Length: 492
Image (tube, rainbow, N blue to C red; front, side, top):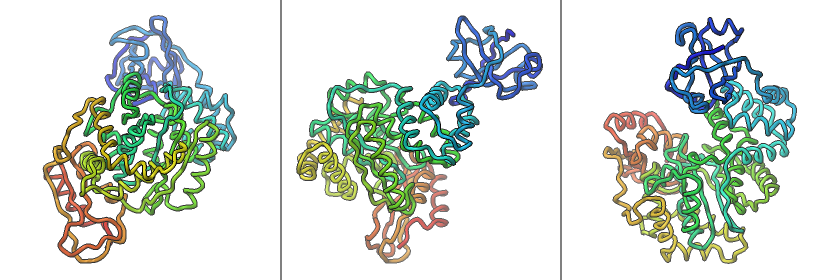
């Protein structure tokens, strides 16, 4: 059947989808969620079909941006369609739902179909659910990791030692990457850091680095930056590294599912795709983190070590204190200020952030085989070498290397949260304080967020500030005030 293209001028965000009129569907005996092959100018693409009574006229086919781009179509082009078979991986998803184990061939096919948008959102969701309800074996996880790497681009670096780190997350602040990269690069080691944007936190590393420099680069440009500075801090989402991971995460997020196997494969695939040889995994433990107790953390640690070793990496997993935010600033601009304060060794720098970075740098040096790592990390920081290296990286990434800390703009509206009594800080709820910073506008508004004056164990006097909220509008501040009254964010 021949149909004329109608561009729907929107995207699905992944799956290839087309829409036809119900009268045309009747002729071909097509049903919603069937697949069709679309033929145009010697090219073929497979899409999931949807059926409409009135949105698309008879004789037309509505295509979303992904299909239009794949076949290089224009509005009103004529295409030919016919019924197509469902992907092989549908049978493998059913197999996983039944609790059976998948082979290398089956996992490879699944990942290929995910990367090439051959699965509908519903089918991908069932794969994620199947892996969550029927956890993958260690072998399946290893195969999934390798398949993710294989279906993406790779950054090949001519160096015996390529170091990297990853935090499981769940802790606001915690901008260790932006201090560790310049420390390790100043010590002469290659650290090509691809970082994420925030999903539920006030800022991701990429959001914070973007306050100081560009973070979106193609792989060749990233490689040039690394060659000159030995390090970089870029947004991983702009690169095609283990792209199946991003599609899986898009399903996990609304379901609030974090399947262990996919967590392991996701992290290690991205490390493997940038040629990492020595990796530190940070697992924060706390009541309001992803990993709430030492038993779970130790289990995850063993899995990381087993899979990482089989991928040829040297891995150290550190279990860290996740009871409260790390640093004082929560939000891109405020966290960037914290980072510069540590690198410049200012008296008002957040010492908890500095201590964690020194400890992790010492772990790196030990993993590499260097002695006296803690002393070396301290010396690189105190001498200004780390700050000079960060300036070099900022300049290479298109930023102003001489920006002063106070020149980083904060959102114009602010609200001080005052202690209503005297006491000692017993707890800070990571989830609630992150939520409050996001209500204020972080990370979309770079200058929005929260500045903390107190941490667990600190004494507080009645009438003194606990924290200041920065927001981009008065209406947001009004909402912040309302939320503060309803939430017990800090217990003292």
